[in-house]
Image (cartoon, rainbow, N blue to C red; front, side, top):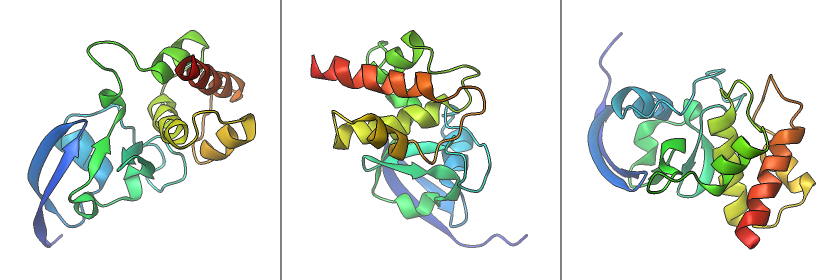
Amino acid sequence: MGQGMKRVVSLKINGREVEEVVPDNLLLVDFLRDRQGLTGTKTGCDGGECGACTVLVNGRARLSCITLAASCDGSDIETIEGQAARGRLSALQRAFHQHLGAQCGFCTPGMIMASEALLRQNPSPDEAAIRTALGGNLCRCTGYVKIIKSVQAAAAEARS
């Protein structure tokens, strides 16, 4: 395989400024996992179909397995590792724990990141809005009921 082109990308990852040379064909999921050590972002299907790799790019949910790292130049990237603040779980992380929204946990980072994007746009989503927002995130362990309950609980906590 040939070397291909490379470029310098500057971005903010979980609030930290990062500048690095990346090949044009490097996927964001590989950049985050292999180069930044942020292994909470999972590689599931490798084709944009399962949602396990969901991160926030400028506050919007993106599938990092079909996003080129170079295309994120100048962006603000958030991963599951950036959701906890000062050692305290985020409202969504707590809700997924308390309401058993995770079983094996593999899909959970992507579910939480997609849910975070939803709650930032719609702090009081109904069940249909939650189902729509999580429509691209697959879980093989749950029936989604506890995941939806977890998102509802986090939204309720934010409102109180």
